[in-house]
Length: 91
Image 1 (cartoon, rainbow, N blue to C red):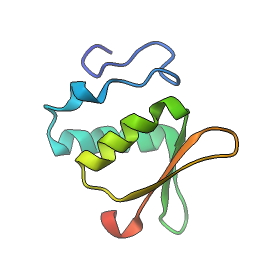
Image 2: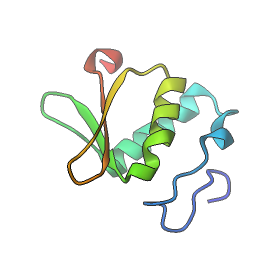
Image 3: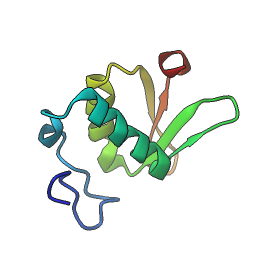
């Protein structure tokens, strides 16, 4: 928990992305894959969408920007943060 800056009730308490600045892109991709496994889905059309508590929005934006992954962010009508990764980036 300390290494990755995870806190209890992580649904509402994202890590500080600044703690990840010394991670390599390979390590950050591994973290992204784990987060997709937990909060995301891959549709049959190969779209990757992540939906999470709005408190995670900045973390995902910082992570995707660092990895130069294009995305589209929105807020759902229920107040959740949603980000869709552009398919041509990861295929």
